[in-house]
Length: 91
Image 1: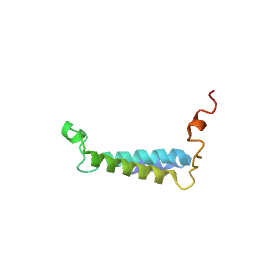
Image 2: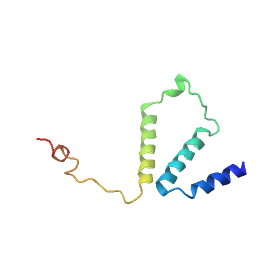
Image 3: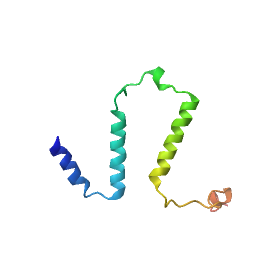
Image 4: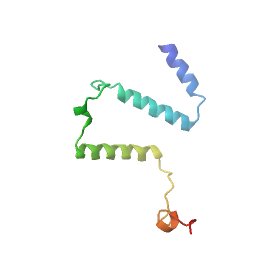
């Protein structure tokens, strides 16, 4: 197992930052998926969550997404998100 880990680490050294972030997200997903108490098969009754639980999950996902973007995220101007800005090239 140690040899496999060392091989993975050696190969990671040649990846750029965007590829490393993809690998990290994948490893996070695998870790979450294999967490103790997490069943690999979800029954129909487990698949349904309340509206409030869904909102909480969406908020957590949005927060995680914002954290992953960092602090140098360009912001769209008011014009860019206005109807005129969206359809400016169409007569």
